[in-house]
Image (cartoon, rainbow, N blue to C red; front, side, top):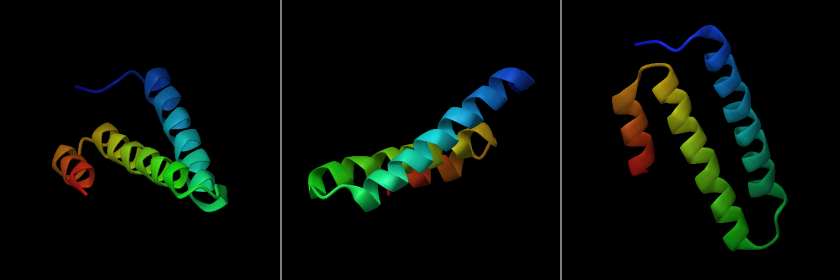
Length: 65
C-alpha cells in the first residue's frame, strides 16, 4: 500500500531535515548525552526512510542497532 505522492514527498522532506539536524547535533553538541540523543534521532530517521521504501526487515534491524 503506497502513500500518495504529496504525502510521501512531505515525509521525505521532514525525515531528511531530521537527518541533517541530527547529524549536525552529533558533531556540534559538546554534551555527550545530547549528542547521543541526536544520534538516536538519526538512527530512527534512517529506519523510517527504510519503512518508506518498503524495506521493513532492514528498518527493524536498524532499530535493533
